[in-house]
Length: 110
Image (tube, rainbow, N blue to C red; front, side):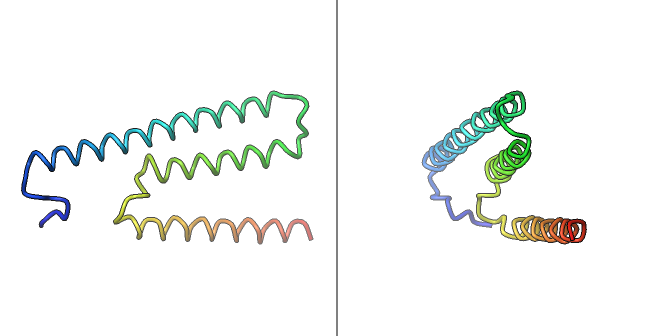
């Protein structure tokens, strides 16, 4: 199989791969730092008494969703080409889970 990024010149290919790897590592480090920051924000929100209980749970759920997105796209490399089928299955599962929670919460509340 021929690689579309292969120029035939080994020095160019190594330089290109190093550049891409450095770029990818930078994204992962920034994403990791943001996830640590979001975790600290969640702990502060839980520990702070000035925030109401009705705000804490949805806020922490929102922070968790953001962290899941970071993990999927940067740590599990879902942003790369060739991962369309796993994305389809993940998004389909999220949609079915959302519909299930919506249906059960509707049944319980009414």
